[in-house]
Structure formats: structure tokens, C-alpha cells
Image (tube, rainbow, N blue to C red; front, side, top):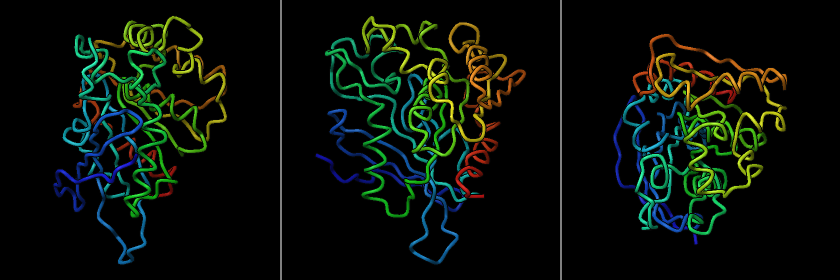
Length: 287
């Protein structure tokens, strides 16, 4: 049963507020936290609503990393966009082995719906696509949840791309920083998918952006991806060339920007986040 989110912290920033909330998630079977950045209202009308940009974070992250480190609030404030940052996995379920490795289990939900019994609570896809938007719509009338876009980093970039491609009616645009675009062919993805989804590789393809682009290619506008050329995970884990080739074959517009000297960190993200906010603000008509 859905419970109303309770506010657990609030900090003013660029005229708006970062607010953190806690609620019980029926989808995941545990308590979850999420952040919302509410930009300052430019209208005296109480009926003014903000478009929503969801941000999905990467391995080992929580709902706090993006809010504390990206500096995205400056551009979000200027464009009147609300930022929503959920956590990256269920927590506190005490499933055996859930915290044994940093790239699987707690902090590593991969934004999919697990099919293996042991990991049945790992349903971050349904949480992000269904439960969280409904929760926001029910309890935050100032958020225009029907006017939304999605972005993310690394594992969260994988989540943003796959969720967007499977729900083109729900999101106006997508972007990503250093996304895991072809998880069926990299160690992170193979480890997670084997455990969460089992051994059937066709099930894996449902959560692989490079595979999905062949099916869901009616993409309006272009996909924006920034990738640091000095990212230590570039060659073995991220594989942006595979996604670029798939987009070309499907006639999907991709703006893949390889950024010289940048790594996988939030120093990289904070450098280019304003471009991504503008990309989404344009799609959401919030410019």
C-alpha cells in the first residue's frame, strides 16, 4: 500500500530547494529515499507546474550523489525544471550476498525487474517507471509528471536509455553520461544480468540499449551522450561505439560527444551538466 512520503531534509539552493523524502515502496518491499530539487517559482500562480527531469545514478551511488555533486540545480533553477533523483536499489532487505560486491546487489539495481526468486525485490524498473511517478503525481501537485525526461550516469545512463526507449510515450528526451550501453557484452552487465535475470540471453536484450534501439527507433529529436576519453571503464565496460553503430543502422539521431581528458567522475558530469539540462528543457518546452 502506498504511503505518503515524509520529508527528512531541506536545503535552499539557487532560489529553490533540495528536499529529501522517505517512503515505503510496495514495489520493492522496503523503505526508500529520493531527492527532489524544486526550482523557484517564477509565477505568482499557485497552479504553476514544473516539468520533471529524472536522474538515475550509477553503481554504489544513492539518491544523494547527483544532488550534492553535479551542480545541476543552477541550470534547473534557470530553466524551471524539477530534478528527481531516486536511489539505485532496494536497501535493508538483508538478502544473503546482497552486499558482497560493489557492482551487484545493494547500490546496483541496474534499473530492471529481476526474475530470479532470490532477487525478486530488485524491481527498480517498475519503481522508476510506475511507482515513483505516481507517488510524485499524488503528493506533489507542483510537479508536472506528465511532462518528463530522463538522464543518468554509468549504470544510471543504461537505465535512462533503456527506460526511455521502452517508454517513448512517457519521456520527452533522454541523455546520459558514460552509460553502460551494451551490458550483455560487458562484465558488469553479464554479472548483474546472470544473477537478476537468469541464463536466457534473450531476456537480457530487453535491458540493453544497443539491442533495444533496433526495436524502438521512433525517437524524436536526438539522444545526447557525453563520454570522457580518459574514463578507465571506457574500453571494457561502456562500449559507446556499439551503441553509435546501432543508432546509425536504425537511423536514430545520436549526439555522442567524446570529451578529451575527462574521466568517469562527477567532476566530468558537473562540467557538462548544463548542456544536458538545456537539452531536456528544450524538449520539455521549459526554455
